[in-house]
Length: 275
Image (cartoon, rainbow, N blue to C red):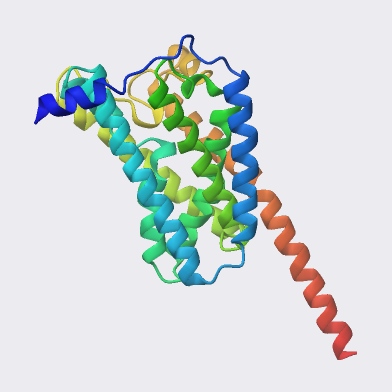
């Protein structure tokens, strides 16, 4: 059976003649078309009822899950010689991987659930930010192999779509308390990532695992790698958490401002009607 999968995924291991450059034709065209399609679909489905919204969210989560299975299988069978120690680094628990879990779970929770609201707010801010950032700095998504490159492009555009859908539908949070709960969820995920970074190399000696790129290993992310070199991984992790939370809040702030403006207009109309 292993030889079958090795043959299957090796046959899919086509390379580009040259690794696609940042802001080259492939990058720009996919980004422009993907962003347009994501915005159009999110706007079209913004008034979906709860049942339809949950179905879309659940489908997106399951599609991401299927895509991740294909990606890990490709690397494991075609590029990593079926070496589990090397493959474990691809375990899907990066910031961009969390919608695999959050989207389906949120879709099964009740509309009024605070946990659901926290998950939706997280995907509307942290997830949307991570998906968009990957296109702004595409060094991690434009690879020499065709399959993982298109996988990464489609994957991160799906993150953008999920964030837009939640924002346009108004189902994400609008208050500081809502964002606070999403931030707590993010911090909790950071500690889960840290636990995996310690546990997996213990179970598989020699494994190079760095979920969220926050420690205890040196981060491969710009700026944070310099923080690691100058201080230590604890400072690197705290700066990571703080920086991403500030970034996510910048995406959250417009939703909060718009919600407050709408509330003021509604209150003004009601007071005028009474008079």
